[in-house]
Structure formats: C-alpha cells, structure tokens
Length: 135
Image (cartoon, rainbow, N blue to C red; front, side):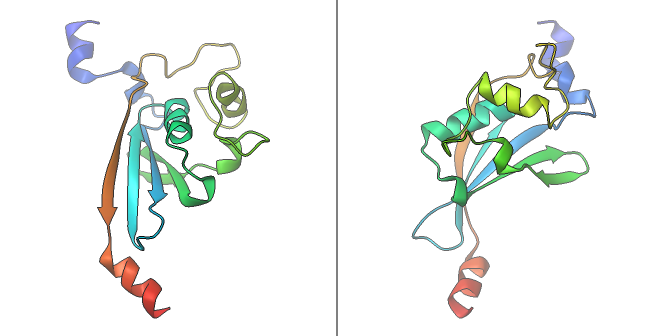
C-alpha cells in the first residue's frame, strides 16, 4: 500500500457509485429503545457478522451510508431461501443483480476495502422506549 493510500484510505471510498460504508442496527430484545450497531466497509462482511451473531432478520435494519445520507438495503437481497444471512460467494451473486460495484465479471469494486466488521456499539434512546410504553 502506498503512503498516499494509507493516508486517504481505499480508492473505492471515493467512487460515488458505491456506499462509503454499511451499518446494521439490531434491536435488543427485552430492552425497548436499545439497539446494537455493526459497521463494515463491505456488505458481504456485514452479513457474515450478522450470521455469526445469529441476528434475527426481523430485528435488523441495514443501511448504506453515503455522503448524501442513509439508505435502507432490502433484506430480501441479503437472505438465502432458508432465511439465513448470505455469505460469499452467494452474497456476491445476489448483490451483482441489485447493487453497483458487485460486478458480474468477478471483479469486485470493494476488493481494496477491509472485511472487518466493527461493533457491536450499543445505543439507547429513552424517548423511543417511552413512546412504546404509551402507545
């Protein structure tokens, strides 16, 4: 890796067709208003982490994080026919039909990014909990 790349980060982070990063927000069962968040540079590594954590799809929201905002990822593109989180290479085959950068030629535009997933980071919003109790 060049000195410039080590400072600026992966080149693909500057490709405006691609999300900057991905975030999964998982509701914590039994604690209204609490979520655990996981952040990853690639959608495939995020899904693998959700599978490893045994996150229930009904409790998860996945977002593309872009400079212009957060955009939901359809979970139907992230789950196999068995309802389990997809893993590579099955995830790649699903994504290439729906998301930029998942090339059908086998050249993934995310190849220069880390496949590590950070988290969980716990967040608690008492206002959300209070609304649920009143409603």
